[in-house]
Length: 379
Image: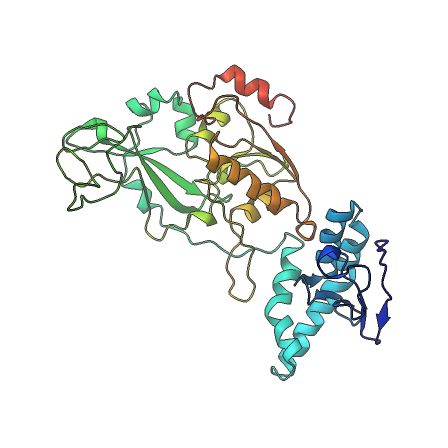
């Protein structure tokens, strides 16, 4: 089916077909593998395993790995997986439950097969934790706050994204900007708060500089906190209680389900800037460390950020921050969506020209962003 070629003899015992591993022949084939360690199962559950290089999984997983190396087309094996493997996996799991765990192999499949069958269709998800709307109503609505105006956010944008302010009643310059996080149905999931000043600053003595440590108490040796007054400096970001960043996509409540093209960015401010320029579907991962976990049917845990994005979009445009963390963020996302068993997504990368910038940076002009996004259908 995949056109696999091997220089060693193929052996079979009715349940497994064995030959030299095509995934890493430089490791253990060496032209004459008398006892091949690689095998493909011929039972109702198609699987492969290699004792030498430790690759293992379903036939569709093998198709992806092999075709990535050989440059082939894994669609035939993937179609086989969806039509044959998944029903067989479900049957095996049901039999395991009926046998009350007497079959070790069946117990293994019972723990993972339902999850695999669900995930490959991108259809079944589990509910994410919600917050009461009263949690966000205690903060002020001030769409003309000086920091909002300074960052170029219009009143319409601030209202659409539900921005709020946690005021510092002693000094207005030390307020916090509140970003509510909603799901696509409009339920409040969490919220994130950001200081309304950009440089590390001590709110006690107004000392500003790179020697100010965010969110740290001063140490005995004089490090940490504020080096001038030796007091605690609040963290730049704060979140609602129980906040698990990897579960959420910021901006999900404004997604148009009919449009299957989306833009993915990192920070809190970047999606506001792009939405203001007319980008229809733009969401953020709320940081450079993205969540790659899939739904777990056994624990009924929801899929994380990249799974959520995969449900909403068939094509993604990535705009990473121009730094090392942004490059790592981009590679993680591309690697995730390159897995054939998850359904391939078209992923494009838009690179900003100046180092240290992001889509919300004022050094990146509106004209520059419009030009960079012009080749993609994001409007």
